[in-house]
Image (tube, rainbow, N blue to C red; front, side):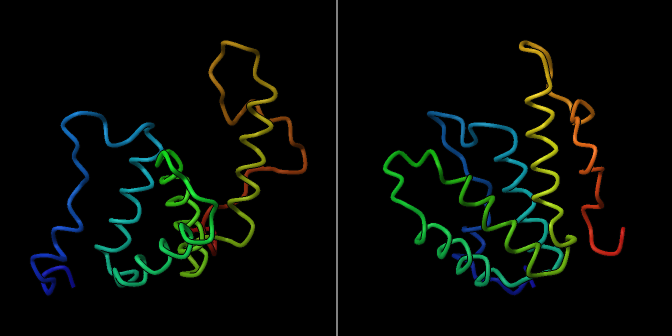
Length: 133
């Protein structure tokens, strides 16, 4: 797997580094990046599959002249990947997103947004993995 990669392919897998500015604007961006690399390194998919999926996501989105939406597109491609691989229960991402939205709306200004603040009675915590792993 990774041992079989050519040097130029290995270069693509290195963590991004920019001496002038942080590479990740927010912690979730670093997490999304790490998730993709971890899934790849553990053999869930071939790198070419990821390149194609991310390219499709970027190509189907409106132009982003600032580059500020890159990791949002990365995250959407990651959602599609874990769904395609069957690593997450259908609808789990949408349900969890709705719970976070409700938690945000239910949290008083200036306080930490916690998932436990969600008031969604119908959206109880659903398993994030297929088969309740």
